[in-house]
Length: 261
Image 1 (cartoon, rainbow, N blue to C red):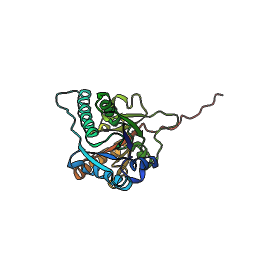
Image 2 (image 1 turned 90 degrees about the horizontal axis):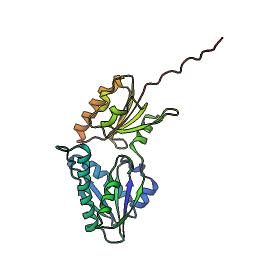
Image 3 (image 1 turned 90 degrees about the vertical axis):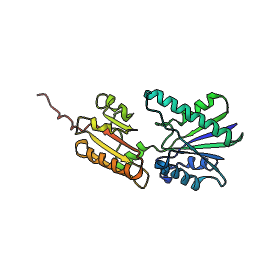
Image 4 (image 1 turned 135 degrees about the vertical axis):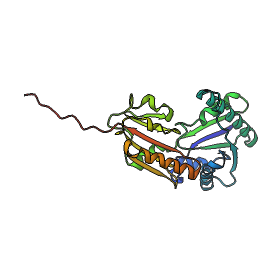
């Protein structure tokens, strides 16, 4: 039976691979490399660099184009479902055409495969199709959330405080109504601009782990325009951007103790 490895590779820095990830990259017969057009060619190049450094001699690299998600005329969930179905069809063909029985194939997944990534769900679709049999092993990776906290030298949570993780399109539903600290991912619309309390703290980072890394932190009212400008400049320069940020309510001093007489 074929074996598929889903390997979290962190945020792109080669030193952020786990020892387990390095070991299994070296054990793969075939590694599938997604391509998303010339404007994101750098992402594929990062993967190829890791494979060159840690892959076995003679490992086969197979590039495949990732289709764009349909957004016109369909709702968000329907668009994602159609997109995943199209990618699942591509994966099925890749396995049949490029893997023999008993071989191991691998996908190198940005960050951690369990957090805002759909590789596992798509592989489940392929397996449910019944045309190709395989097992799946998943290896965790360092997340951009972890690296964001490390770069800003902060804990993600306050003492005894929960943390919410959300895509940008859902930010207004949870912050500040139900969450005191929220990590925002997949925010193409700069949802932080709609936060009314300008004393809110923001810790922002883009391209974390890569040479072009940028970080900005401060009160929202003081730094939000700088973040907008930095995003626009970086996107124009590189053709793509991956960023993440933490929002948290401003710290308030503890109430003064009173003593009854």
